[in-house]
Image (cartoon, rainbow, N blue to C red; front, side):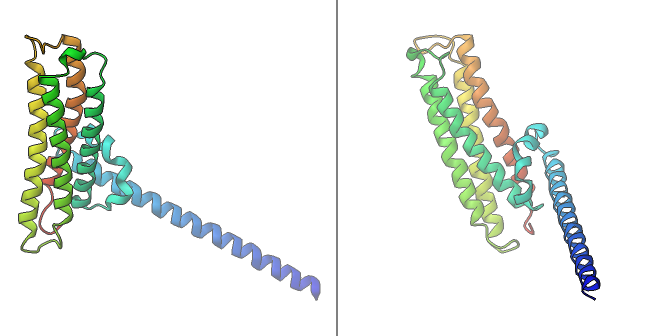
Amino acid sequence: MAKSSNNVFFFLLLLLHILVLALCCCFSSAAGASSQYSTDFIRASCAATRYPSLCVRSLACYAAAVRRSPRELARFALAVSADRARSAAARVAGLPAVPPRSRSGPVRDCLENMADSVDRLRDAAAELARTGRSGSPAFAWHMSNVRTWCSAALTDETTCLDGVAQATGGKAKLDPAARAAVRREVLAVAQVTSNALALLNRVAPQQ
C-alpha cells in the first residue's frame, strides 16, 4: 500500500514537472514571438525613413518597450538622437585632428549648434510626453510643436556641417582631416535626427 502511494506521489510529481516545463516553454515562445513582432514593426516603420538600416540598428534594442506604438517608437528615436548629439559634441571638442587654434570660429559655432540641438531634442521629447490622450483636441497642436523642435535640431546640425565645410581659410582654417573628423561625428547625429523626424511624421492622432 505504501509502495503504491509512493508511486502515485512520484507520478504526480513527474506530471507537475512536465506541466511546469511546458508552461515555461509556452511563455518563452510567446515572449520570443512578441519580441520578433515588435522588431518587425520597427523594421517596417524604419522603411519610411531616409536611413532605414541605421534606424533599425539604433532602435531594435527597444523593441520590447515600443509595444508596436508609433508614438513610443518616436519617443525612443528622440532619446537616441539627443544622446548621440551630446556624445558627438564631446568627441568634437576633444578631437586630436582639430588643432587648438581651430577650436574657435566654425568649431566653436558647431559646438554651440550641437548644444542647441540637444536642448531642442529634449524639448521635443518633453512636448511628446505632454501630447496626452490620442485624439484629444490638443494632440495635433502638441505634435506640431514636437516636430518643430525636432526640425530645429536637425537645422542646428546641418548648420554645423555647413560651417565646418566652409572653414577652408583664415585663422580658423581646418585641414581636410579635421573637417572630415568633425563631419563624421555630426553627420551621424543628423542622420538619426532625420530618422526621428520621419518617425514623428508617422504618429497619427489615434496613436
